[in-house]
Length: 191
Image (cartoon, rainbow, N blue to C red; front, side, top):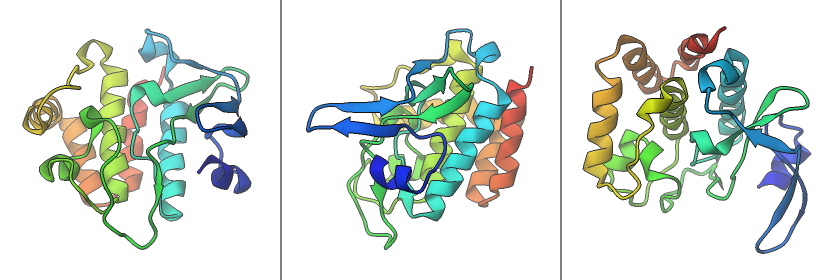
């Protein structure tokens, strides 16, 4: 997957140097965003991630594991790098595939389908994007739902996002395929 992305010179993905069945060597050397996420994660990083998702979706590629721990910082040029492409899938023919990813950040349609086979779509990554931005903006509300039922995960996100105007607007933008509206969420990271 990374080789294909690297050959297209897509920004904000790691460059694959070498790999075997168990290990990857990538560039650039990155670090996780610090705990003071509000000052460290910036509007430009949010826009970089959104633009990356837009580009890969145009290619029929879906990351399927957008979450805070998969967002790294290239400290040499202060740019975002989305890592962990192990769940990513190229699916231009829209075939049903088994779910892979982190259940805590799974989209409503994946949760409604009880993590069963589904047709990946941009909205799945974009719901994960909005949930990730929420957690990065509100680090004390980072959910611990790894062993929770799909209903518990749906309830958590419904309670956290649906009654808050900005976040509800972002969810509506996803449902209406208004990617440009999603850029508004990046404004919460302006310093």
